[in-house]
Image 1 (cartoon, rainbow, N blue to C red):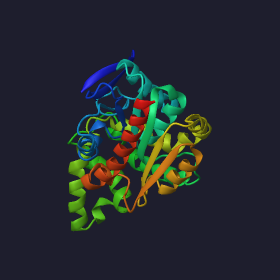
Image 2 (cartoon, rainbow, N blue to C red; image 1 turned 135 degrees about the horizontal axis):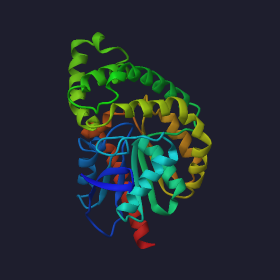
Image 3 (cartoon, one colour; image 1 turned 120 degrees about the vertical axis):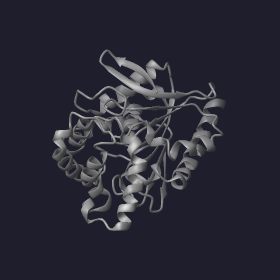
Length: 309
């Protein structure tokens, strides 16, 4: 990865793969606390295959994630958007397409509302939408995660490594995935858990454990204060083409959030995937390809329109 200095004290780790210079790149926006490797197992191979590896793209780690600078200031929607702005300016990218998952869909919506001239289209899976009342259910999930991560305060000075990874996952994520502690998993569930751990570790490696506490606290305690700001950003998206993708089995960003957002946007379409969950497409090549097939069709359509207009 390369490093872009977007402020005196902030460095952002990124990977910029250039292909056809005549087509604006796609910037992939990670979910939650995942680093850029979230895209490597499933989404990115599908994207490359479906575009014949002809599209430029950018992957990056948010501040406080992976190889980017540690997070010091509090999280805000504007800070997340301005971080992306700093990266685009550093790479001299004037206009891009945005595709996010989970938290990345929220960042893309806010960024587009603030800087519409820098965005051609928005796409995303696992839609974050602060305006639907069901967001309170999502907030409660992160209240529970915050409580879990606070039991690991002794690890806050560390980054995620192979040494502390299992303790972290089994304390914070296992109850969220299996609805019970690791000690109560069946033999079959523990085997599934082992597979998930192997696939997820690269996506979390290097992130300061303190970042989990900061982000989960933001989701649980502060994000609700930004609803009015989010509303203004969504309104400012205007006629920008938007593709919303969501699984009907998603427990983290329920499909109702995407349905509500579609009705609030002027030029949005929604595609639902039966029984797809929130994280699984990041690991499952078949599901990721189904999602990327819809997105690349959307991308081709609007790239073609932009080219001939």
